[in-house]
Image (cartoon, rainbow, N blue to C red; front, side):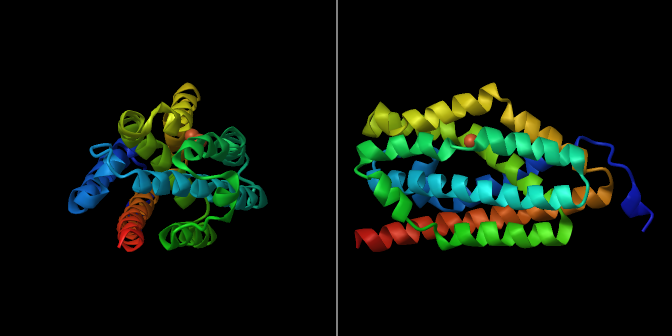
Length: 235
Ligand SMILES: [Fe+2]
Ligand SMILES: [Fe+2]
């Protein structure tokens, strides 16, 4: 029990980043069909459109999730974490609109976007994280926000490059602008700092690693679902 209260000595974000990298790379390596998601294959316009569509829906749901977490933080008196999350939520608000612009040249309308449903795996991710907030407070939500920024900074530049080359720059302009905003606002670093402030003991770090593992498993489910729906549509 006393061991659980040990103050974390190494940088927890470095440790989480290496866990995230190992986990995501294993997911992508096991699913070569997701190559367009890594920017290695620009052939599948339909798959790319589906990825952008799901990104839009997930940004909207993430805002709902952060608002839910914010409510929890304010209710429990965690003022500093609430302030960080409120600032992040404010900065993220409307980013779905950037990506809608990319879908228009791919043949989709705003009405299509508003009528689209998230993949089941995305519903599971959001629902699971809501549950996790109820159990463990803001930590799982902060792990998720940091992971989203970490993932985007590492993988989205390749996707933008491949999509621009394959389908025209207009199909990735919004995603590219989104990356610039994330970079200017230093989102990956700032969400890393916000997460770091919640990790004080070894027990906190173990919990953060646990939730990161869950997130990677749900990402795996998302990739598999993306492929299977695509196969069903194409068959
Ligand atoms: Fe964003
Ligand atoms: Fe961001």
